[in-house]
Image (cartoon, rainbow, N blue to C red; front, side, top):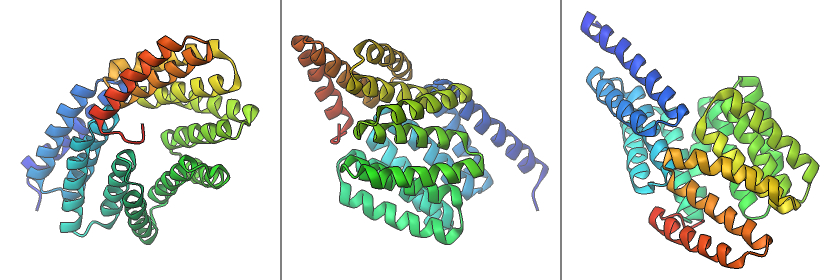
Length: 291
């Protein structure tokens, strides 16, 4: 039977998690990490293993977005261990999904696909539509990286349809962003512009700093490839402002890479080379082999 002290602790835990999520969305990532760590301690004290597995993934997410892949992997592995020990199928699948994302960033494509595959089977078995859509979308991202843009677009569209039905606005913004990237790779400028505009609208409504910065960065790449260097610079500057505030090393490196491409297109090769040098150092520091 739950004691009064346990009930009070559980209420406090919910408040701490809510505050952590607010801090993360606004870009106050140091504060978010401190609050998530507090929440993890409270969940352990309550023996709430589902919440603990979840919180460890949230901690890992902040580290991953900052480019600290080792810290992210450690948090994700702890989440997986907790889920496996207590037979929490959905949380096992969720942990496998995020561990696969780390392996993908490290360039371990075969391992990433293996982990995504395991996670997808469990997500389908559990009947979790949101998680299934998430993992399918991550598979599609790998297809897009390999140049299989038609396959990727079909998967993104399927994921978007699921997210719309579930009312998952953040996931919809991610799916629209990914669709914009795939259309850009195919040179389908009108379709790409429409998807990025929709994604930016959703991100602005959500007020989530990280997704807004990511969409600005990918929109900048679209304008670079479609030949509008001024618009590319504008969106690149918006992305850089967000990622500098977030102290996200991987995303800052991605922004420098795009700045280099813009300078190259403008004929400023020395500036381009200088920026690429910074990218290489940041990518090595983050162990982001794909970058």
